[in-house]
Length: 269
Image 1 (cartoon, rainbow, N blue to C red):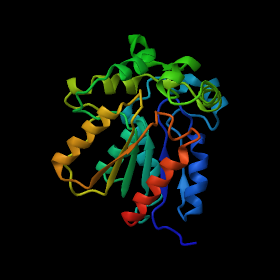
Image 2: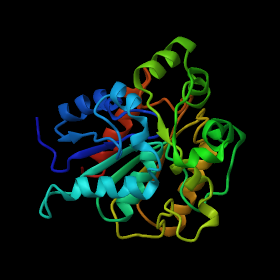
Image 3: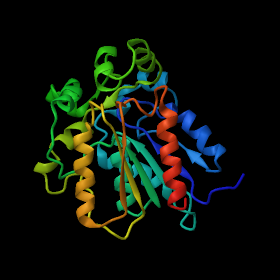
Image 4: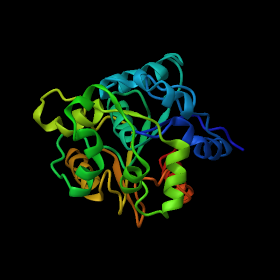
């Protein structure tokens, strides 16, 4: 088995613990990649410990998360090969910011949270975010999803049993601040959700979307892709038919991982 020169760093999104990446870590390691899946600043090592210490995530924002991963990547040494970032949901937004900032060699953004400049605001997205955005006080504290809320936002294409099992196994409280920052991005010149989509001198980016995603609907990710297309950068788009926001952790995760692996191989990583 050949060893790939670029390591892969996996970045989770809101409400899902980093340990949910374990099947991906094993698969990518089998393919020769050095892999890691560090959590957000404030995350504990396990789902249970993060639930028990939810206040550690209070007021953690997008800029904090980007800086956290940039420091992790930078700690490997200035002569180290840049990693590839694979991010889901808000992790997909973070991956794009790391790519634009020159911290990673390439990025795969799976159903990524919207960047500044996106105007689409589908009803399903509003309903998915309402458990946080419905209360302004949530900007400074963590919020957990109930099994019913998770079923709508993540598990809408799954059986109730599979969705509830995923909720029980992998969900953690999430800081409200990133959602508020993302929701108001177009009203702030220096929003932390701003990404330079016209930057041509950076590595390749793959944007993906599940057609049935409620949290980040297909229309949103297509609009993000359109912003990149205007800049002429190396950006591709892949659509996952019939998949929702749980696509990285549900029983169909391997379909998504295989697309990422094929794309990385095609790009020479």
